[in-house]
Amino acid sequence: MSVVKRIYNLLNVDNQFAYDSIEVNPKYMGHLAEAANILKQYPNIRLSVTGHADATGTKEYNERIAKGRAQQVKRYLTIFGLAPNRIDTHSLGEELPYMKETHRASCSPTAA
Image (cartoon, rainbow, N blue to C red):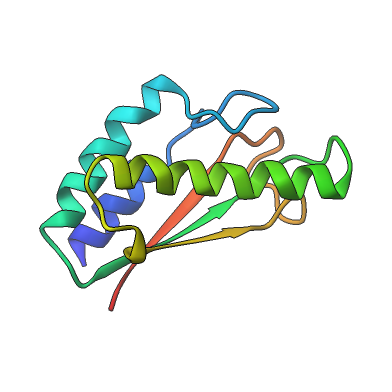
């Protein structure tokens, strides 16, 4: 399980996204590339990527932002070589902000 913890720590760092944006922060790209490279070595591990947003804006808008963030994480992981069928995306919108002013899409690796 140390691999799962390593992936979790890589993908759940601060400042993954700019405020009010689904675009991945360039500083986060290295984490995504490293996680994809590790995950390629462990084909039985799947990811569940959950997008979050803060409570500003409408519920619908925050749902869209959060889902977009999760999908962007999946997009870049697949660009870095991870099979898309190993990644599920979800959104919590504003229902469960990851932080007070969240810029996150949390990732939960699980062994299949």
